[in-house]
Length: 186
Image (cartoon, rainbow, N blue to C red; front, side, top):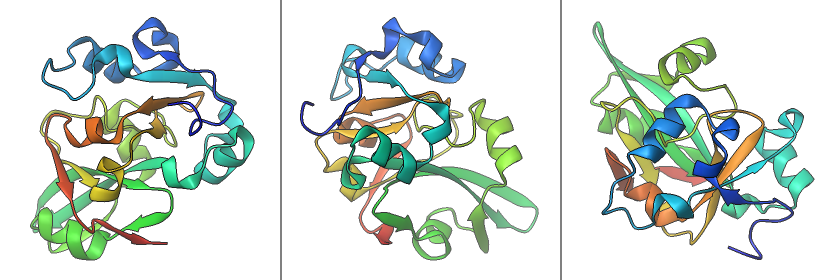
């Protein structure tokens, strides 16, 4: 991972549960044996929570936007039924919420989940939500660009750290689907 992780001081995530949200710790403890990487290859680095938002983080830690992934929670509605999903996209792109995501969720209306709802349902901090450790019944929609990136930086469930992981491993998470053109170039 050297060369793409900027100035982050990375270490095995399982050795630093203090840098992870509880659902992330739990997910790493039961990491699937068939995953493309071992749980020990999921790394974490402490960061200044004040620069957790993507653009500020990338500038502060010399991490390229092309290796920084965002995990956004969307809510799709059809009548009274609400379906949630996570979209994992590169920072250089924007999720196609009203096109691709809406169709995948079989929703009439689709939008970003409100912040308080996303935090409550995931057990993670806003601005740090990660696809690792989400509710088991949620689809994890991973843009094909993310899955094709050798190593990406993504949230850790909290604002004071980031996870480094192989892009293909995100596409192999439970309930993950790699979706071509899930996102558009921003």
